[in-house]
Image: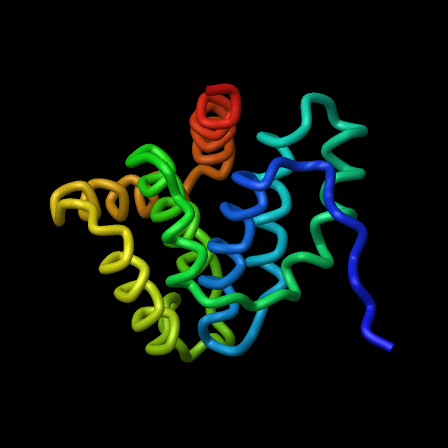
Amino acid sequence: MLHVPTPPSITPRQMNLLRIVAAMAWSDGHLAAEEVTVMLERLSRIFATDSAQQQALQHELREYLMQHLPLSELVSKLETNAERELVLRLGYEVIYCSARTPDEATINAEEAAAYQTLVQLLGLPPETVQQIEAAVIAETAPPEGLAGWLTHTLEDFVHR
């Protein structure tokens, strides 16, 4: 019998963001623990207001990270450029956070191909893409800085 997870306590727009970022994480056929951690921590800080809610939401959303839906279908549901930029930032952060082996590049060939597909689907100007990539690279060194920025940015997005 197929297990269907209970619908999460987030909005459809928030679910779409989660699914796009998860699709990027799955692009190489492997979901790394670091990728799961980044996604659950960042998104739960935005979608929930206190630490108890954030922990509950992390547990709740974990099942949805296992779903793999077509990127083109998900991206077409984004409504604003702010959403597109946010998805690009989160997607790049997720693929940039881990390598499958110590000898592999941080972003492997499969992830790079999926990322280029995402960039094309989003249709953002090249300079915007470059700025987002540079910001993620610069901000991943001190995790507190990145987490704080993402939390603030996602909170602004969610409360619009």
